[in-house]
Structure formats: C-alpha cells, structure tokens
Image (cartoon, rainbow over all chains, first blue to last red; front, top):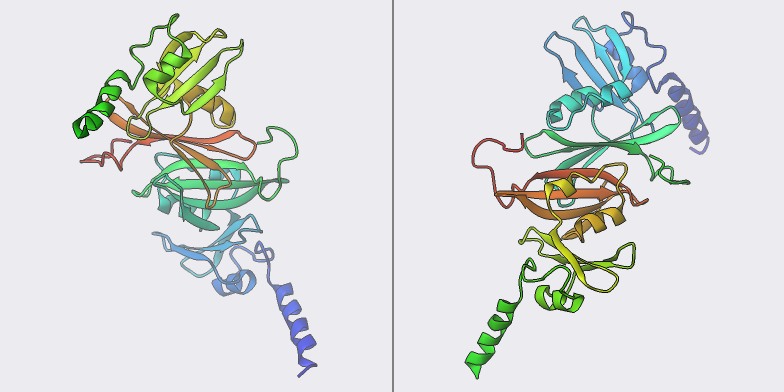
Length: 167
Length: 165
C-alpha cells in the first residue's frame, strides 16, 4: 500500500502533463469536443449558440487571471480557442447597457460575485492582467440585470501600492 | 409644569433653523451659527486661517450646509453642498477623500467590502423632486475609484418605466 502512493503520485504528474492550461496542442478543425475536455478539464460553463455551435468556458480564475472559450461546431470539431479576459473584450462592457447574459457570454463566469454594500447592485469579479500589470475588473448589475458600474483597476490586494497614485 | 416642559423644546426649535437662513454673512459669528444650526457634523480648516463648519441633515434632509468663516471667526456664507455642480466635480481616479469631505461634507454612512477593497461613502440628496443617492468608493490610497449617482428607488420606487435610463 505504501508503494502505491509514489506510483499514484507519478500517475497524477504524468496525467497533468497531458492537460493544458490554455488548450495548447489542440488543433482547430482536427480536435474533437472529447479532445478538448480531455486536455482542458471540465468546463465551468457551456453556452449553446443559435447556429449550432457550442462554447465551452474554462476558467483559470482567480490565480490564473484568464478564462478560455473553446468553440465546437455542430459537427463536433473544434473551431478555435480564445482567451476572453483581454482589453478588447473588457472595453465592450458598458455601464447602462450591457446585460448580465451578455457579460457572461463575453467574459465567461466571474471568479466570484456578491451583493454590494449599500448599493442595490450584484458585483461580479474578474481577475486579469495586461502584461505584468495584474488587474481586477468589477461589474455591478442592478436588479433588472443591467450593468451600472464597471471598474477596472490595478489589483492592489495582490500587489500592494509601493508608490503614489499608481492606478 | 408638565406643559412647560413639553413646550420648551418647541420654543427652542423655533429659534433654530435647518439651513441657517437667519445668519448674516459679514456679521454672524461661529457661536451664533452653532446656536442657530446645532452642533456641526464636521469641521475643516480653510487656507488663510478660516474654517468651514458642516451641518449635515442626512439622511432624510438630503442636504448638508457648509458655513465658512474667515480667520476672525466672522461668517462668509452658508451654502448647500449636495448640488449637481459639486457632485459632478468628483472624478474617479483623481478626487481624494479629503477633497470629497471638503466639497460635500461628511457622508451619511460608510462601509467596506465584501469583494472590492474599497470604502463606500453614501450621500442622500435630491435634484428638485428627484430623490437620489450618491456613492463614492475609495481605494486604500484615498483616491475615489467609483462614483455612482442614481435615483433612490428604495425611497421612491419606479411606478412605470425605469427613469434611470
């Protein structure tokens, strides 16, 4: 029994060697949905699209600071894998117009959510980064499901401020 | 005797005023302002030796009165701070806690968390009949990061269409 432990550890290491954080090695047009699941793990969210495509969301939050979306066609083959927490996507979130469902489709599931103090808003959190700059994005939704507050700032909790006015 | 005890506070209240309308700029003193408006909720030293006293009527009064005095302790003027021009002066990423305190006066209440490492300050105010709430959130370096001003749905629920849109 004692010998089994190192063996199972070695197996775990060997298995994790097959898994991939960002889906590297999966080829669009060749890989199947089963390949995607084997390499990237269990999706955190799945979205069926009107054209028959299916998007699988793989969150690496909070430490990973990225969420990947693998889109699989109606024929079951991989169309592509995209990182979602990128400036172009984040800029699309608009206070006063973006809905909860739109944000979930655009960015994937939040790393956590909670009710704001005082404000009648549900706050979703995404941890992401631009280059070496670790950032936090918060989106506050009013009860009608519309984004009212979009705040993106340096992640002071992760990396405390050393100077003045670092944003 | 009972009747007198009951009436006395009413008589005193009749002398006091919510907005300090009986105070005279260039003439009234700090002591007169306090006698008129009650104990100040906040005091800020002004450049040049003067000071400003803030008389908060929050939450239900939806107003804060700021009485400014020169170095000699003579009233310069009384203004209501919770007005659009001042509220719009608060800028995310720029305005500091001290600046908001001086601009508007003390918040009605403050809180922190649960997710964001920000301290939220709340002000109840109004534009004419439109009851509103202003929230300003500060990061730990004292800089405002969020400014949200919206209709106060709790005090005045929507009757039909969402008026914030």
